[in-house]
Each structure stands twice: as C-alpha cells, then as structure tokens.
Image (cartoon, rainbow, N blue to C red; front, top):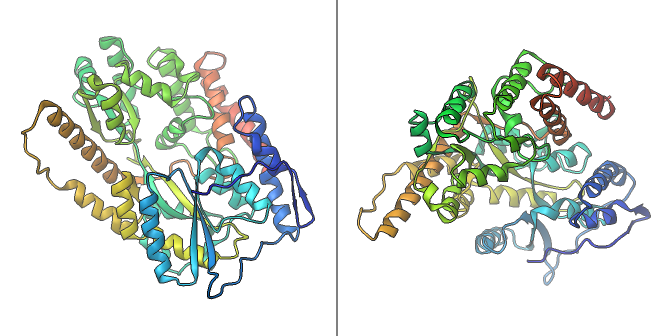
Length: 480
C-alpha cells in the first residue's frame, strides 16, 4: 500500500511558509517524542490560520474518458491483513460510482497525525481518514474537519448506535461517522478467585475494596491493576465517571471537584495506600497489567475478548483457569465503548464522494463482514443485532478430537462468550470520557495529582482541588 512520505523539512504552501509540518517529521526518533508533541500541537494551532489564509485545496484532475477522478482514503493499520476486505469494498463502491477511483492508503497508527498535518499543509489532504477520536476532536475544534451534516442524508444517524454517533459530534456539528467499536470485558483467574472466596469478580466499583483485600490477604496476589501513568490508559478516568463524577461543565471548566470527585480520589488513594494495588500503577502502564496477569499475579484484567487467544499462546497455564465476566461498572451500570471514526478534512475537494464511501464502508453488510473478520464490534445497528444473534447460537462442535483440539475448542468458546458479553454491554454503554479538545491534558493533570495523593505527598481532597485549579487555568486560556 502506498503510504507516502512526510520527511520534507519545510513546505511552502501557496505563499504560506509552514515549518510545523517538517518539524514533526522526526516524531518517531528516540528522545524526541515530547518535543514532537509540542510541535504537533503548534501545527494544530496554526491550522485555522492556514485554512483561512487563502491556501485553498488542490483541485483534483478533471474527469474524462481515460482519467477518472480519484478519491483518497486513509485507514489505520489494516494492511496487509485486511487488504482483501478493503479491496472488495472498494470494488463494490466503484461499480456504483463510475468515473471515480478509490486510492486506499494504509497508515501506521504511530505516524498518522504528523502525516495528516503534513498533507494538509501541502494542500494534498486525503478525502476520508480513519482517525482516533482525540486527534479528530482537536482537528474539528480548529476547523480542520468538515461538518458532515452538509453532505449526509438527514436520517444518516438512524443506522448507527446512538452513543457511537454522538461521539462524533462537537458544538452541534457532526464531524465524524462511526466505524468499528471496541469494548472491554473482565477476564479473571478463577483459581485465584476461588482461593479468595469468590466465584466471580465484582461488577460494581463499590465492591472492589473488600474484594481486593480478600485477594491480597488470602492469595498474596493483587486483585486488579489500573494505571495512573498520565499518558497511558484512560480506564481510571472512566471509572471516575462511572462513580458519578462529572468531569467538565458546559464552559469546559472543572466540574470534578465535587462530592463524587472527592469520593473517587479517596477510593483510589485508599486502595493504593493500603497496599491493595501493585506499587507500579504509578509508574507503569497497562502493559504491566497484562504481564502481571500472565504471570499469575493478578486476579483479573480488563481487556478485549481476543486477549484470550494471546493468553493461550503466552501463558497457557493461566489461560486454562481464565474465564470472561461482565465489565466493572458504577451504580448506573454504564460501561465504556471506544469508537473509531471516519472524518473528511475540510479542504477535501471530493467531500460528497468521501461521505458516500464512508456510509458504504460502515453500512450494515460491510460492518458485519468486517466484525467477523477483525473480531471488533460494529457501530451499525443492523450489524450489531445480527452479530449478537450469531454469538448467541449454541455450539455445534462435539467433544471428540485430541486433547489439543479440545483445548483449542474450549478457548474458542470462551472467546465467543467474551464477545457476546461485549456485545451485550453495548446496550448500556457510552463514551465515558468524550474526546473533547484537551482531554489528554485533563487526564495528565488528574493522574499527576492523584499520584501525589497515592504516594502520601498530599491529601486526596487537596490533590483533587489542585487538579481543578490546574485544569481551569488551562481551560481559561483555551476557552476564555
């Protein structure tokens, strides 16, 4: 697949001198990531100036008998595994749209942000891009993404899970079409559960302290690992929302310094100070949770259903005792869902065709096929309903075969059971931490102050108040 290069160190765009695109080209080099992030942010901040400075789009070649128009579509980390699937989708859409050819470019996840900024600065943006929600939200806030309501049918949202569709809106504008979803379930070591006196892990956060104490006292292991590393998993921030914390108000100011916020900070601080969380939660990320679980030192881990397959390879002894359970929730029973989006850059000269291809790629039939192949969850309602019915069908395989084959059959049944739990959880799911601009800064501020409370440097109430002060200072500068 043609990924293209963004290594040029400076771009002159229709008389607009843009250094930021070249500056971020070294983002992947060791020791330069923090500097690259700052430069990437500067690129984002300069985006509205670029869009307003008369640096208009490069017009596509005129269509003709021998020269079809070209629609450029970027995806993330799908090649080469899903090249046949994408080829089938593209061929089917092109048959319906003679005179338009799709150029598919698969981009590594780690480089899509700098490549997209470089393409925008060079006036060669793709027409449709698969983006993660935080970066898409930042682009949308700077005017870099098209308001899709101008090119979508009025009833387009009806085909999708409402929470997934709403995740792509900002300020009354729809900047994204949802594609595939992921949702975590709880995978637990039943041998450790039994030693701790449990047949199943808790389903509510308020039940976790007693459970964590029982696991630690009776097994010498830990119940769970939830990282407080600022730039890692958002699971702890999501848990705060599940506990009833409102993160931000309508003016984007801190709303988390509240009774619910104080309870949640005290919850995590107390677990850590009592030795009921691994000490590394303040210094290591989610990967450490996987390592501890595979070593048999953790009673449960929150992960996608397919982790069961990896577990069978990496730690077959632990896999033999692992079973899937519903994810942890708060009093309202809400679970988290992660959404992958499709967006149209505001300067795309083929916005209508891009929206048409996005709707086709995400319709029920295409999403169901992709969900089966990629083992993700579809955002299209019809595909989600059909997948749920398929996963609910009883197993037809017999109990014969070798011990290895029977073991593999058991693992596949567990994966199927875990996927079924993930589908069922979507009925009460939402994006618990919306990808609003600045959300990564919010997570960094909250986690850093919570770390201080956990380490006994400050009380949990004072840590929460300091987090609110720091966020409000940032928010006042960004949203006066």
